[in-house]
Image (cartoon, rainbow, N blue to C red):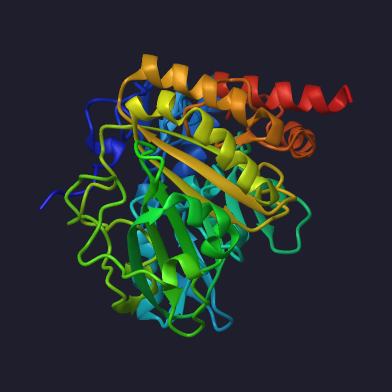
Length: 436
């Protein structure tokens, strides 16, 4: 059985998860406790060395890179504590798989999970990672508080009613090193996952809103090679609140056996399908925690557009499908509910996430990404912070970036937690907003 990628501190390569980014950091430290994090951060900042927290390395952009010191919070442990009101205190370096298992054992659950349970909680929240579902916010919408260490070594805690929390929940690590988060939970629930393959493309297009609303979490996968069919539709339904299936799905038999989201790949890493109900954390992700998720050797891109533009955006994509398909492994559609998190891709609007998993070919992928940004431009796209992008699409709402800039100036005026990626992306967005 293949295991998930090792944490960076156990890796001699200094590479991100997929191997497309070689980190420029001078070293990695893993303090054993909060005091150690404070000492490491304050010491580095005093020496003029920048610091970046590093989690599970699942960003395809250079958002987590630094020319200074990388700091892992895995030394703070993975133990989750749930209070009487269901608020879960979570160490920042714990993965969703580790957290979910403990929550489920305590009879609790999160509102949603991402495709991969392998990713760290702090890193996923910080980059605006999301799952799917018309009524489900991004993972960071569960954050009800967080604790971070600033450049002076001070520990700052922002609770649910703090006005800065919407800026800190998706912060890209630009405010400090997050050491703990408090997440809202709910009673544990079961989910049944069913997959339909080779769905007629025209019928799906006619019913796309109903398809995306057919379950608690829905993903539409397509390799864009055959315009007459869509590769697969994954529907994850809560057993305690089943949604009505779109007619295009209800009138067709589901897949006879397990299906990998990427066509042609062994489905063993995929979470259980076939309509068999099971614990929420064993169905909501696409992949099992004990396997390498997705393909492994790949690149990823994702754009967020208003959900109201889903038909127009899909039609625009269809126009360039033959140009994109040769370098594409799979394309995925998901929906995300609007939130008020300043740097979130879904800030202020219900959203459709348009995702691409590419072959590991940077040159051709770059050409495909630039093409996509041109055809999606009329639909006000935002690019995912942790994915490969072409540089012509903003990563968030400029108004949110302008608010975040004020918070960043207050908590990290010396840019101890900055890097070239953040400085370019955030400063340009804030400048664009101030000029309007």
